[in-house]
Length: 526
Image (tube, rainbow, N blue to C red; front, side):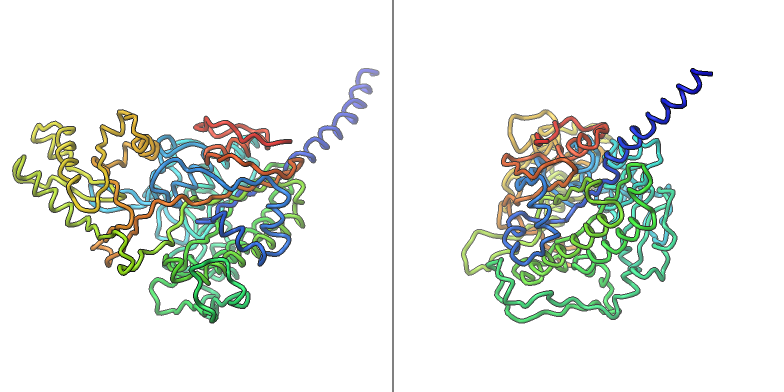
């Protein structure tokens, strides 16, 4: 009897201690990925920010101004996957937002998966292409599936690749309908959010919405490109087929994302149930309509100021529901910038135009002269030429020899700086560029010959209404910021590799890093 009483007394003593330990541990992780956020623009516009958004994080958090992405051809998919998996494309499998499909000779979304229907969308996406676990997966696993994980972003790549494999749901805005949508790959689609009449659905508000400057134009003086002193007004007309795509490159999309994130915080009780929960948020600071900073310098500055206001709204909502002292929040960027335009010809800077479709035809004619008639080159995508490996095999030719011959021919084309064959990359040449290419490579999706273009040239895609890609090799100052309980404010001076983010957050949470992550956590003073 005495033993039973002693046992009961001991349990009364132990339970509060356990409860206190749970209470002290972080209850919520908030991961924020901002497409094309730049450290230099962030600091240049600080005087226009409030005190509770970017400034709060810069003053109270861990701050690194130089995040390094040591692999090529960055886009939202590649960058988001690297941030959340803590490893490079070679291992996580995400090498581009769109990959070239040799069978159909077309590009397709890397997340395409016809095994799963879209929920309120025709897009059939899943996270299957991501070959390793990510930070969201580890949060889900550590709670034996009881933790809740959601992601919300304007685009599917950011939403799905941050959500991982076993999240509750990943939500994005459909390009055709302007609705919040998801995929049946995830088991929990918040019914009220994917509903066509959800209050924060862009399609519901866009007819009566326009984008005008938040502040007076003369206050936007951070960019030397800014020549305008008159306000702008951008609307999204119903008869514009691209209205939702254009909307998703505006700061109005960021406001919609914040609305949904706050809705999830409240209605899913994130961080309020004694379990570690996670919400991943994607914002954009891409140039409006995918234009240039020369065209939209005023708009870009306004987008930074508006994003600061959205961060303020988000942080205040977190503090009111969970408590910022129980939240681990990190913000980072996708590490690239697409807004630099080609200089006018009167500046006499070396330039030119490269037409991939013509290059494919010329290379094919050259290989026909060597090996006979045939469709030897099947396409070009992401600076890669794809050879017809089936035809080469049927002709009993040596694939590496055909690659070498192709590289020799392409090297003489105007606009091409250097050429690399797949075997040269895989054999790990001591060349620094081939090492970078290998880190961004996937044998499943890779081409046979890789080309590097001369800076100042433009790639002109004739089959895409003369879409142009301007070649410029400037490094982009990319920030990483972290706000966590019991972690003092500090500046990380040395460059940080993007693969260090996931293990750093995992260490603070005291959970496992993703299974493909081998990088050491950032050395943070605690």
